[in-house]
Image 1 (cartoon, rainbow, N blue to C red):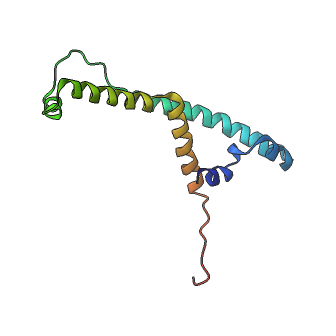
Image 2: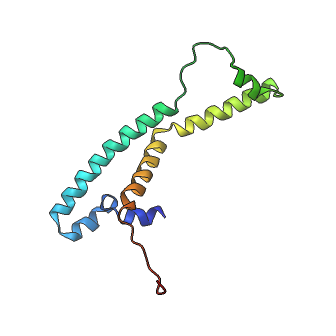
Image 3: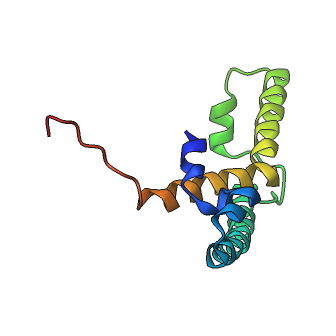
Length: 123
């Protein structure tokens, strides 16, 4: 339902839609909102990337929790699991993906206040 959310936000409207409105104030407001939003999304994405990125480990010591997680695993299985975890983290840290998720979150927040409730005929 992203399309429905975005249709209600002028910041996602195309140039042709804004031009047909013939309202300079609306066009200026949308431009202003677009750039403010782009700045907020960049800041959010950078913060998320920093929060998700693992701290550089100072040594190769294995913690007790890592030992308990690896019990019964062969070295090959452990390495495959570690590579899989790293691949998933790299996908999550992709800046384009993070920005898209931030835009999606902002769409939900921005449309939440203006959602229309439909009442059925029975009340």
